[in-house]
Image 1 (tube, rainbow, N blue to C red):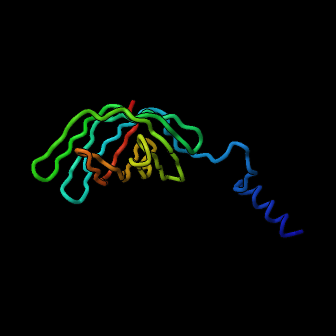
Image 2 (cartoon, rainbow, N blue to C red):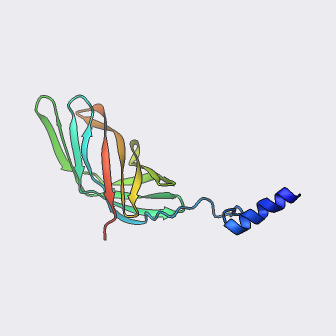
Image 3 (cartoon, rainbow, N blue to C red):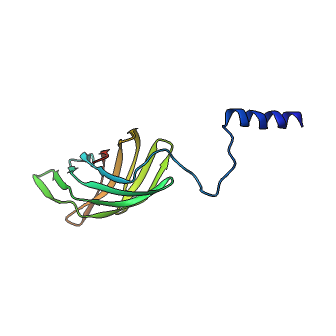
Length: 152
């Protein structure tokens, strides 16, 4: 009995123990709004090199989950033998967004464009992107870094 009173008193003094609420998990990170979303170097390890510069993420957030869209930007790729491709990035939904501590993860279009990263500041993030990229009907696994900053 005495030990349980001590635990309860310690929680009260430290304000570190909370009753579960029906609101679910929370985070101090705020993602709602617009963010840049650049991927300057994406590679497959066999000579396929791509970059995607200029897209904008528009995000909504509910607790530790978020969703939205990505629009704009230019994709550029080169591959062995002198092949190249360039064009506007197609608009796509942002899906399965989640925040866990300082870690953020989300998919673009589907689970084949997966991003995992972390907050650098409250207004910037960076991470790794893994994707499947198709050229002439053949699929390539590409990976690289992404960078994102909150935009005004």
